[in-house]
Image (cartoon, rainbow, N blue to C red; front, top):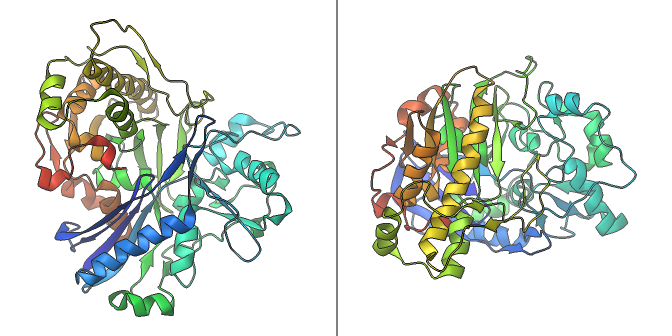
Length: 470
């Protein structure tokens, strides 16, 4: 049995085929870059129809090469937090507002939750521009009465392909409108969002599966009748793909953005552990939660530096970075894209300090990388307070696979913890497949863990540019 794993990221959409041990089938990978619209005003959007076209191209490529022939299950890892306003006929009234967008502001007439801490404990989120509680009123104000309902980018895409596309519990938790214990839409969050239940996607029941619409089943005949599992939020999928499936191991994932997360088993209906004020909590599925902190910067820091600073390339860059000791870069505030929740710093809050005429482009790059390491280290300490123990750490994501220096900088910043890294850059897709198969217990054993100073083969890790993978 093979599994088609789709990774619907911020900078690219990817489809790869895994065997029954969730190992990649050689050559069975299709990838398309997507165009993220960003602006100094905090814009961070994706065009839904264009993104759908990229997904269709990936499926066509895999189909034409015969890679879909033995697929018996489709698993999906999808970005959290995005939202699209829809007209009565279901057509988008604008682009998908992604996690990177910092423009939404609360309505002037709203005072927020009655009890902010209770709201945080129930939903795992805050009344914040990053969630639908603030985004929906802001979008409605801009689009007016034409808005009939709202959906996420992932649900929009699957709604165009499948017979039905309810929102998974994992994706719903990323909206900030879900009660994480009861797994129902939270009444106060809906009130703040100015939305009714019928204006939101339906919630997928446990063990839900969808199937291709007849017209698409003709196009991709090998997938006709094949079940599609409920999508898993990309951060949750990355934890599973990194082998971090219990409270002893935290995942630090650096793709386009970055996050530090800890996964725990907390079945629906069970009381949730208390959540520290600065951390969020979402659902992996009906039985597991993931707690952590996220950052707007990650591999996109490298992308910016590479574009603007004329960095050396390939082995020359690796050699130049090797001369900069961890912690030796220029001081930097890496909030170029602003804060992720609960912070409120706007886009454009990044800073570079300590520059001189002797400062090189590589010094600046090292400082940016180090700045992210320091933010993660601080939040990891808070995350450990929820389990009363020091944890080991697994680094993962395309940016980690591509940079030995960055891995070693993380190891230094997170010392004395045991720090290793996951060699497989496709942790989101792999994690989604493991969730779909219900194989949480095996995830740690299947993870391809290596040393932080280990060189990664280009045939395994793909292009050696951190910004190339989300």
